[in-house]
Length: 290
Image (cartoon, rainbow, N blue to C red; front, side, top):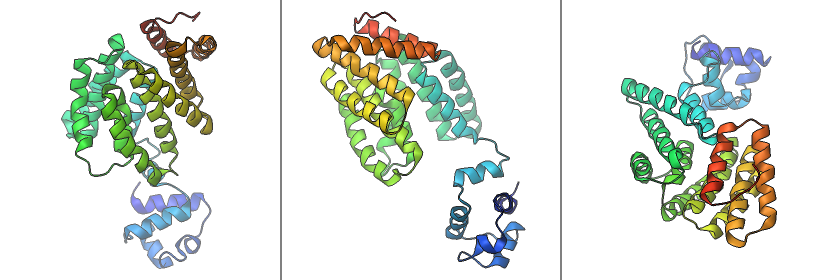
């Protein structure tokens, strides 16, 4: 489907006339020319049309591509899901796919995806930050340092590599990112990014045995998860918080929190995530009935 046909399809799907859609944006006959692919509107006119149609640019592209999910976005989504579930087998397959696509297209997003997968695989081997993982993450870190400003892609990229940074690096990047998030506060994706940052920061602090900071960041992560109704993220944040509390004070109620959330993970059949947190608990010598 071409550009004009897509505009026309969305307009007719929403039962709008050409006059209703074009009013105050461009002349009706110009819209007719757009829909017949005889005229391309200026960017500001195009986005005004999308706003009148109440569709996002991404939705427009999806319709134009016959409802197919844009592949790079789909790949990033699959990596995110595999990461959340600590699914090393899937990460390995996605790494190979991203590597092949990078060789074919020379698109840097595929290169970053490949590096993230390999770094996560290296980390999941023994749940420790190691030299191999840091080696994979370094090119991404250099890319982020080279940016004068970040957009959603860079924010997501950073979120994927927090675990491989030093605490100082992570906090430096986080301060920049959290300020930048204000510009994107009405994007639903930002809610996940913001919450994930705090969860990942708490995980990083646990890795470095900084349990006070881990508790503080997981407190914020839990609050954000509740605010945005992110159930899965709330479970992970509460587990991090409970681990920090046990290591700090031996809090008995924290053991109950761990048992409850591990049961939720098992009930939801997130087997890889259950195994991940089981190994995480062993690492910190925390014994519960899971």
